[in-house]
Image (tube, rainbow, N blue to C red; front, top):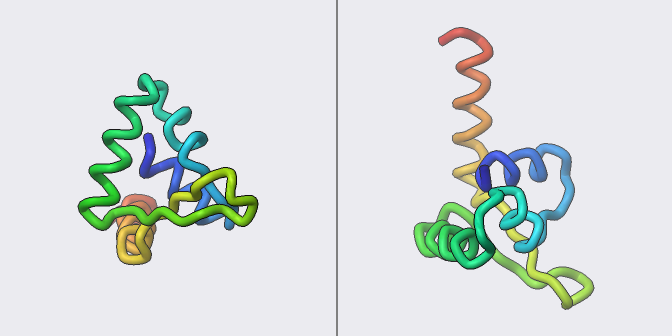
Length: 79
């Protein structure tokens, strides 16, 4: 759910906050944050301070976003 949420945000060119991404999972916040921390450690997503400095924004690493786009394009094209 997190990866799809982040892919959607990336395609829509909309920022995704850590809170939004965690809420998208439907998991308890602590569990969702541990998964998010793991994805950061593995280099799948990146965190940065939001422009309002009250939130942190999360986004897919560029190679992960490209890979997900390619994967879904191949599914649609029937490869």
